[in-house]
Picture 1 (tube, rainbow, N blue to C red):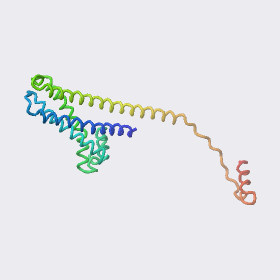
Picture 2 (tube, rainbow, N blue to C red):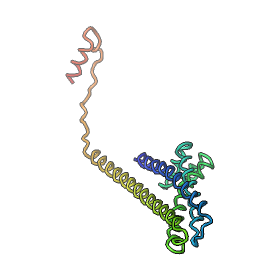
Picture 3 (cartoon, helix red, strand yellow):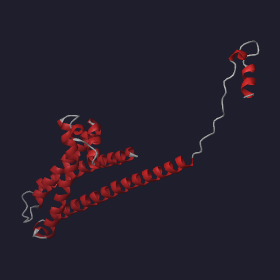
Picture 4 (spheres, rainbow, N blue to C red):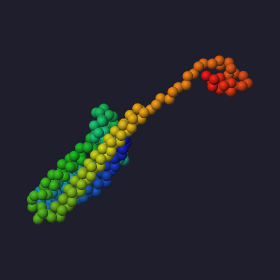
Length: 211
């Protein structure tokens, strides 16, 4: 059932690419458009950094989906804790770096999203830049919803795989315990000379049935 886990990870990677492209465009556009707006929490700067992280994630997902599927497999093995250093570096430095980045960038993005949520709660942005605050809060809510949905999806997939493996192992052990060995008929050598002649192979069948 490892293939099911890799399939789920590939679907998450595909979603990360699509969502990363759209959200990065929105975040970068908002950040540069409102870079000169007076806002004591610097939400314009937050949007620029957020857009860079989203664009980086989208590029990594695109690389793993379109250029090197092996890099995506390495990321999944790293996530599962089943990847050695030699295996990680077997495809080269760039795929190895992107495989590690595939796991680190979402963590940095989650931290930065929480940072933006803390920034948006206080300050004068609500009065000086309400549109900037509204766009930023929308980005934050959407990103947090994506993180929660992806985490729930991966955990539920992993749980189904574990349950399937346990049930398969239990069924296999019960089947092996209930297998009855088929008794073997005794075999006695007989004179093979009787198997030759015009009556072959009927003479062999008669001799064998007489045993």
